[in-house]
Image (spheres, rainbow, N blue to C red):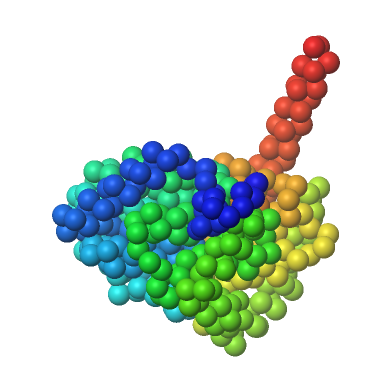
Length: 362
């Protein structure tokens, strides 16, 4: 991404200026109209929301309430916040799915690339008159009537920050806290490749608005129940390194979680340890949910597009970080993922060969 200097959209809010101006105008128009007419605005995010999804939805909700609106924030049940996100501001805006208006005028969806990722809230995409999608996934299907989608943005909260600016709402410390949480979550505390100059500009504004960054970092990454330490040891002890792409993987089943007294959301950080294996290009962690399904998290160091592979398996995400849900055991699940990665590599090779032949023929 090119740095545009002071006075650009990047410098002001940290949001990449790649969303068409017509979409920004439409988004601001429908939201302000809902505020003026006192109509509830439903703000939703994907199933099992992470810091970026929930941070974006809550930050926008706080901004709309400050403007005099009636925001309702929700996500697919069970509506249980991971312990690491229990500090987020605006949780009083959370509303259960069955308490939402059945035909809202406006529904805004955050960090959600496709309708199915809304889970039990998928009906919103059809029921709402205007559907605003705020997202940064390359795999986004842009299912909204208005789409603020930019894969170049480091986080959905970067786009949400721009939206709040355009609504004319000043950032409070609470709004800034939720925005910052999404920013550091999806940049890995500014370690991931998605980190840009604009991300640091946004971070500076958020810190100036009153974010307690050390507290947020401690809650997100440096606080775990004692049982997590034992579970981490078990997961690492069974890690495997195999395959042509040096894929490292492990799993955590229900017996592990029950023994440690943890929810499945609490073991997401395991992937950040597994991915540090020097020999591995791709890291995978399979975590068994209460219904028997497996949540599969993947990470790539740059050469492999895990986002496309996960999308083929019913999930999605980014090129370097993605996931999907599987109903087969870890062995078979990782085998299917490996097959998709191999197919993508073959297709890429054929594409490159075709381009070379075309060049030679010219």
